[in-house]
Amino acid sequence: MSSISRDEVAHLARLARLELEPDELDHLAGQLDQIIGAVGQVSQVAADDIPPTSHALPITNVFRDDVRRPCLSSEAALSGAPEAEEGRFRVPQILGEEQ
Amino acid sequence: MPTATTALPSFDDVIARFDPVMGMEVHVELGTVTKMFCGCSTEFGAEPNTQVCPTCLGLPGSLPVVNRTAVESAMRIGLALNCHIAEYCRFARKNYFYPDMPKNFQISQYDEPIAFDGWTEVTVDTDDGPRVVPIGIERAHMEEDTGKSLHVGGSTGRIHGASHSLLDYNRAGIPLIEIVTKPIEVEAALAPAVARAYVTELRELVRALGVSEARMELGQMRCDANVSLRPRGTTTFGTRSETKNVNSLRSVERAVTYEIRRHAAVLDAGEPVVQETRHWHEDTGETTAGRTKEEAEDYRYFPEPDLVPLAPSREWVEELRGTLPEPPAARRARLQGEWGFTDLEMRDVVNAGAMGLVEETVTAGSDPAGAKKWWLGEIARTANERGAELDQVGITPQQVARVQELIGAGTLNDKLARQVVEGVLAGEGSPDEVIEARGLAVVSDDAALGAAVDDAIAAMPDAAEKVRGGNMGPVGALIGSVMKATQGQADAQRVRELILQRLGE
Ligand SMILES: [Zn+2]
Image (tube, rainbow over all chains, first blue to last red; front, side, top):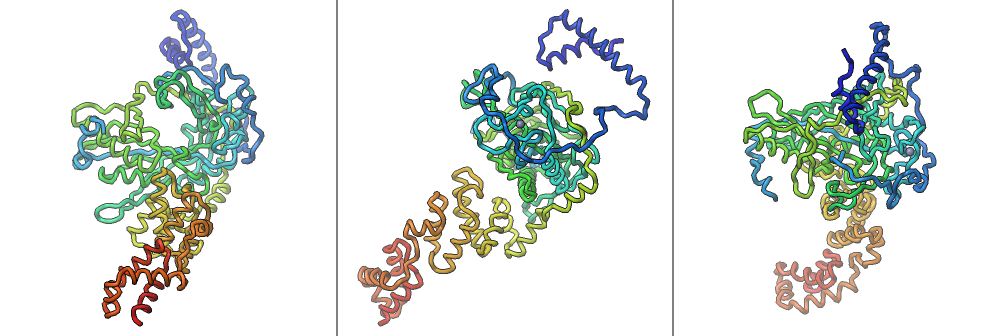
């Protein structure tokens, strides 16, 4: 039984703002299924006493002081933008509502 | 008011039949010098995109590093709200596509908030006197603010109809603390006031902690209000709506009132309440529908791999606990005692957000009643007219105290003092500068007043004759005439003496 359905792949594609054709969905669903299956092998060897790991290094509490550092100039900040206007990044029409 | 509102049942009708459950989510922007995860300045009002760096722009290869002061502020807020501080917690990625977050995710906290399970209490007025209402705190967690968008080409800057949008990321990455209450169950009649009192309480608390100025008009404190309603006598929770962007104390009260009435209208019509976000419109006093639950985002939270977990030691937590200021309720009680104010007077001061200002004014030498009179009178009126907060309206507690001092010294009378305050509020300078520039000091020297008194007596011979004959009734009219002639600048007491001197001879 596959671990990820075609519908779930379609949902993920929507969330990632990817437009996928039906045959691409089939193709990717198969590939993702294999990837999830491979990762799933880890679960099989992990015993109950091993908690899920999010961070590989046993480090906590890394901080910096609340001290200003130089920022980019507005020109530098906007230099990689496809379009800029009035010192701001210009983006195409936003569909949907305010977040 | 549009018909939608007139069709709603009245608030009094609704509160007789329904009980609400509320939940409040408040975002507080911390007043740290730098952002949450980078060293960019957080100062308000800079030119667009001048307080940005690769990290807060989400450029490839950049890595976040946590601001220690922001974490301490978060823990102090948690402690002040009687929360537990997590022994271990992680940041999480909240994934969504929206241009206000250049990374396409926001670093937040998900199921491991830094602070959880606390409480506070608020006091509201009832017909039976003040009532203390406990408010449970579900959690307080850390996250980063978003950038600011400017929608171009549509009407009034709205997103709908806009042809494109412009983004300024100066605000992106500023530390935010989101504070979420447990369900608040209180009788409907009090619900709007409780919501407002809670937000007021939080604002006072973060200001007292010194972690944020919490200026709502600048977006430093933002509020979402969840409301659900159930017919009295039933026990199942109703479906809730979440009203976004309720960004003034007055709006909190109005929005909750509106939503309670709207829910009642839906339930009365036998329709189901839709779980959705609602947008609050300050101008119409209404909410409109936003996203429904079905359309709700799927944020796919996961532990932030670029930040190591936090594990605040208990020593650190206790050290921070030691820095907490006096709790707001205790401070209120202490100040009320010191000032000798009645419950009602104190409530007015607190509701006006003037407690700290009155305190500073008294510290600067004013009597409490005088301080209260100015902050709740002239200054509050001006603040209202300008839509500004009391402490931003252009007069300081020290200046108010100086005005009171000049009244005490007889240099100003009430009328002149009002003109002085008006001048200070108009940006004409300090009280002494306004007095100098406008020539406002009380005239009490006899030579200057004498002529005006003689004129008044000459102009009102009947009144003068009566006084000569021992009838003191018309003295007031004579004084009034002198005050008018001197444009209110005469020392009324001295004028009276001069009139009696002349007419008694
Ligand atoms: Zn930055």
